[in-house]
Image (cartoon, rainbow, N blue to C red):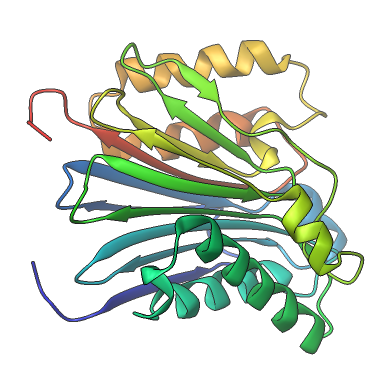
Length: 259
């Protein structure tokens, strides 16, 4: 693998012409990554910022990092969160800390940048895989975006609890320590992970959350190419005329390839 730091920040806040973009990347841990992001038609029709979600990916010699943020109120809190997260995770000294301290340090830095830039509010999901232990994804969650484990039968198992509290001016340092959630996924035992903003279960869509979840699991099972998964999931919501922005990151291992 190229030893040069590779950083990609996906900022679709000004995206107007393309409803969704999908990027794929195969990582050394045998995960095929599929990213997707879309702006809702509601935002485009009322002239507001087309998409307030943001995605980010970082690869270094020691780790792979994935992050997703869902901003509120239209002033770029999500992309601030993504950029700050990747800058923090790039720090060699930071990743030597216990993982719980890594999360607290990163979220505090994001909070400070949001306040400094007078941004609004955002959720934040972060996943890290250390290359010395490539079967474990460490994750953290703040706010009301989703983290699922994709289990060995390709079912989605939600790992975090959605909470109506977001990084921004209404949150204190104590709140970060209290409401931060974190854990890990053993990708050696399961099939991968699925990060998503709450737009994938848009409340304006007639289908219930459980029905949508089953449809997503069907897409996981039946997609002829793994890189098409995020595209199909996003298209499903767009076709149902969901009114929220949508973003997702899916990491799916190949069962025929040893971890």
